[in-house]
Structure formats: C-alpha cells, structure tokens
Amino acid sequence: MRLYFSLLMIFLITACGFKPMYSTSFDSESDYSLSEIRIAHLKSEQSYKLRNYLEDELDPNGVSAEKFFDLSIDVVDSISGLLVQKDSTITTKQHNIIANYNLKENSSGKVIDKGIIKFSVSFSELPSEYATYALDKRTYDNSLQELASTLKKRLIIALVKYQKTLKHENKLS
Image (cartoon, rainbow, N blue to C red; front, top):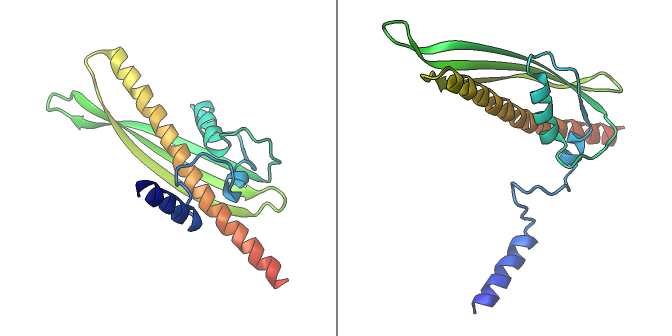
C-alpha cells in the first residue's frame, strides 16, 4: 500500500509542474540570461572578491554565452563603532556596505535595471588584534557573498520583466 501511495504522490507532484526551488539544474531562461551578463570594471577596493562571488552566482556552470548585458557596480564600504563603552573602548564594530548597480543592454544602451543594495553587518572587537582582523575580513567576505546573492535575485527579476516586455512589444508589432 505504501508503494502505491508513494508512486501516486510522485506522479501528482511531477504532473503539477513542481520544480525544487533550490535546484542547481541549468534549465530555465533566467539562468541562461544571467550567463549573458558581463561584469564591468568594479570600483571597490575588494573588487576581485565581489567579481568572483558574482561570477559564481551568475554563471555557476561556466557557460560561455555571448554577453548581451553589462553590469556595473560601485561598492562603498565604511566601518564604524557600534557599541562604545564609557571609557571609549569600542566593543562592537559595524560594516556599512552600499552597492549601486546598473544593468544595461549592450546593443541599445538601454538601462534595464538600476538600484541600491545596503548591508549593515556587525562584529565584535576581540582581545586579540589578529582575531579581530580575521573576524572583520570573514564578516566582510560573507557580506560580499550575500550582496552577490541578493544582486542575482534582483537581476533575475529585472531580466524576466525585460523578456516579458520584449515579448509584449513583439506581439504588438
């Protein structure tokens, strides 16, 4: 009886078009469109790390597609004391990361999407200077990874909207 129920559930799930949300398969138009994005020169100090994270997010399978879109990003990072004791000792610091991005179509120069992503991430000041330095760098790297992931989601939405407007314009003409 369990076998029949399991087979019935599998059939019903696949028949309704269910697709795992976090699947890493390469079969959707938005995935292919993401591989068509060229990351322009980044203007931040840690640009190589952000570029690597973005390349991993936008083209995880290493598809060599023609680049139809340009993505430019300007990242500004500042660090400030978040919790300060009475004797002026800083116990917690905060990274404030602001990324301005702009996605353009190469052929027309049309801006498809632009926006700002802001992150504020805090970390503790530790007794050891090296431990604080290592924690600061790890926190910053994690923030850059999260920035790349958030940007990927925004770009997917922008490209899907763009593709829908192109299909709509083609139907009208």
